[in-house]
Image 1: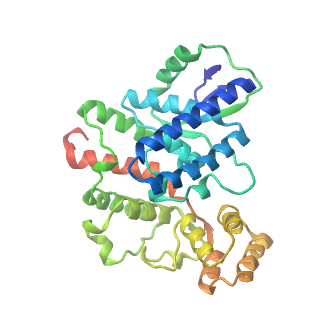
Image 2: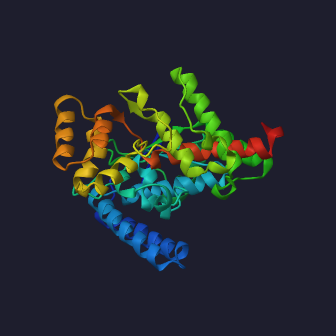
Image 3: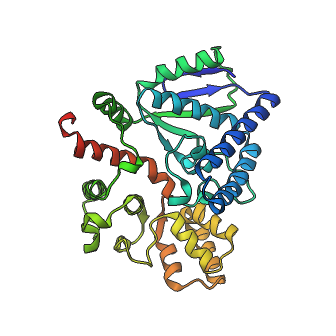
Length: 344
C-alpha cells in the first residue's frame, strides 16, 4: 500500500487482487466483532444490524472500496489520538460500516436510514470518502502512514482519491480538548445544550436568508430539545424549497425535512422500495420533464395529494446522516461554552 499526502488529498495506488481481498476480509471481521461487542445484549438489533452490514459489505466488494474504509479508519484513529476530532462528510457518514469501524460516532439505526445514504438498490454506489480534519493532523497522518506502509511517490494513475477538508471546528475542538483535558461525547449532550445549539442554528439561518423559521412554543422549552430534533432543524435550514411558505413548524406531520422522512412516507403509501429510493436520491434533484415523470409515478401509486404537492415544491433535502457530524460539532462547542466558558 503506497501513500502520498498533498495539501488537500491522500492518494494511493491500485492494490493487487490479493491486497484488496485481504482488506475486504479485514473490514468484515472488524465490523462483525464490533457488532458482537455493541449489541451483545440485544439479539433482535444484532440480527438487524448484521443484515444491513452484509448488504453494505456486498456493495463494498462490488465497488472495490475496502481500502477506503481501512485508510479512513487509520486517519480517524490518528486524528483522535492527537485529541482532534474528524467530521465525516458525503454519503460515507451514514454507512453502517463506517460506524462499526469507529469512523463515525452515531449509531445509524438510531437516527437515520442507512439504505438512503449507501443504497440497497441494484446499482453499486461508491461511497463519497470525504472527511474533515484539523490542519494540524496532516503531518501526523503522513507520519502514521509512512510508518505503517512506507513512503513511495504515488503513481499518476490514481486508483481512488480520499479528500481531506480542513474544518475549523475540528481544529477548535482539538485545541479545547488539549487545553482543558476534557473531551465531550455524545452522552454529554443534554437538553440545555441542544437548546443553545438550536438557537445558534436559527440565528445562522436568519442571517443567511433574511427570514426566520417559525417554531411552535413547545420547542422553546429545553426539555423538548434532543439530538434528533436538532438534526431535523439543521436539515430544515439546509433544504431548498420552491415555496418559501413550506418552512412550516417542525412538528407538522405533512412536512418532511429529510430524505429519510420522505422515503418512509412513500413506502408507507405503498410505493415500492426501489422506486422510493430513486425518488429521494434522484427525483428531488429532477427538473422539467424529469420532475413531471416522478410526479406521474407518485400519482400512479395514488399517494395523498399533500405528499405529491410537497414533492413538486421541494428542490433539495439533506439526509439525516449528512447533518450528524456538523450538528455534533456544534453540540461539543456548546458543551465547552456551558462547562468551560473561560477557555473560549
